[in-house]
Amino acid sequence: MNARKRDSRNLMVLSAASLLREYGASATSIDKILAHSGAPRGSVYHHFPGGRTQLIDEAVTLAGDFITGLIGAAAQVDDPVEAVDAFFTAWRDQLAESGFRAGCPIVAVAVETNDDAPQLSRSAAAVFARWQRDLAALLVRHGLTEERARRLGAFIIAAAEGAVIMCRAEQSTAPIEAAAAEIHDLLLHTLGDRPGTKSGPRP
Image (cartoon, rainbow, N blue to C red; front, side, top):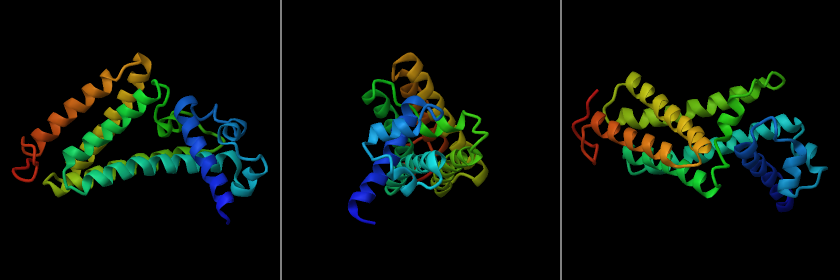
């Protein structure tokens, strides 16, 4: 595949992810994706023989990979508090920069029934599970039990996603800043009530 064809394909996936953030899954049509990306119509079924469903599915995976990368980058310093702070900061910045138009593309897919494309719901669930698993693994390294780490990972994701929805409704970053601050303090307390989080963990 030459560079131009790769660019066309990548642009369509990126455009689909962007449109999901703003308009949701049902409103993200092939026509909108083509208009947003500037890709030729004939390239759709060349690159995505599964049509719109395949394109949306790949956009969900791409968006999931982006947040996974943020968690992984922060985890390189082996600091779960910093990793979670980065997770919330990414959402806050995206909301502010988009004028509160851009939410989470994973949620956009998850909240719809997707009866005609059940794999989309499965893909959204897999992304949430991957975020939870990555966060839990980091917390386990700092002394939490696997069960507690899984619960806390799920709670962090639920708090962030709920806060994103509230921010869009209120046109303010206040909800996600409040959620981030509370979870930051919770992690410090749970992991030893000290900034370094490298000693004194509590189960």
